[in-house]
Length: 243
Image (cartoon, rainbow, N blue to C red; front, side, top):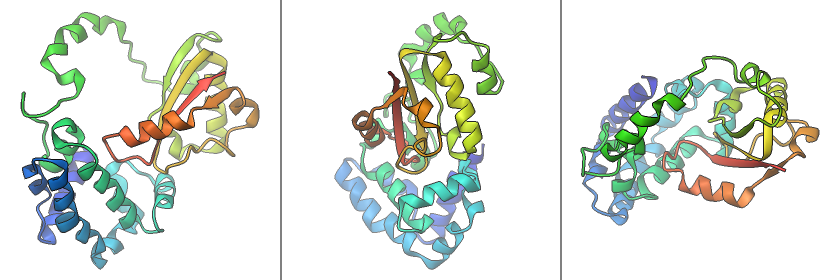
């Protein structure tokens, strides 16, 4: 997919500047990961050519980042996309042991670990296969607009919402329409999680207070989840709980 092509391009760019990103896979601990990042990867982001290329919004289409999300993402750094990408790559390379971070394996090794080599996503672990197979009939796939899907639900019928990062490129009207349906269909104590390209939640000031006042933003938990997000692509992970 596009993300795979973007990762491949990242490796080509690194090699163009004399660095093989896959070299970090030889690190045996976080200290060695940090050393590789500081000595090999970090200097690449100071190259004028890379700074120029990443200043073009089209450069991040491969990550599925449209112009609106690019504008949000760039607020997390010093005003340059190179600084944002450097910080996100630093987290991916240095904050978690490689043997527990399958996102890093995809980015640096360009593959998943072999069995026993390092951690895999839970759904790919052999020990979980039977549980997934035995419960597959509990999954329903709906290819539809989420607002329209929720409009068909009874009030208070839903207790969990996972929005990923789609809100980053929604208009204010779309956000309010979405949260009106989420609020209507949410049961007491319902939880909503989502990610954002920038660090703060994008809802305050954009979604009406009459809707947001019915939710509690769990700031401490959100900061903790953000710190534990091993993908390192996003600036923030957010949790809202229905009052």
